[in-house]
Image 1 (cartoon, helix red, strand yellow):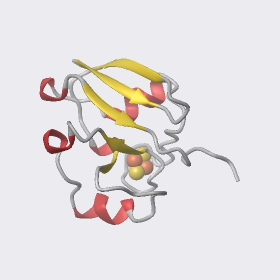
Image 2 (tube, helix red, strand yellow):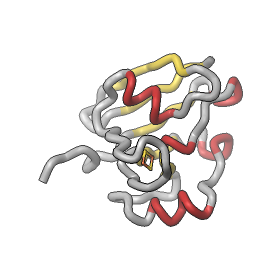
Image 3 (spheres, protein in one colour):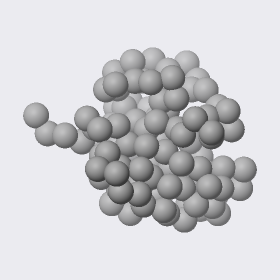
Image 4 (cartoon, helix red, strand yellow):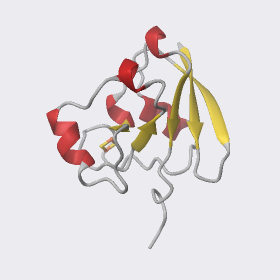
Length: 109
Ligand code: FES
């Protein structure tokens, strides 16, 4: 178990305890973090769980694999530290992780 800090576009933060093996997306949805819709519930098929990993954490989290990388092309405002939060599984190693929710995500048009 470890904590993950979710920074929301309005500047607020939610710090959530995440069980080892759970994804960063699952914890966000279960705790009502705004902007993480997770329409495909972790199947790496929607990009609605897109987050920016804090630069200080990106090397620990690692780069996306090819399928995730392709799906990130569909995400809004991709950055070098973009990841799909459903593909980040919590471990002790990631205790203290910080992610940011993209501003445009979850906005209804
Ligand atoms: Fe759909 Fe992550 S929940 S890609």
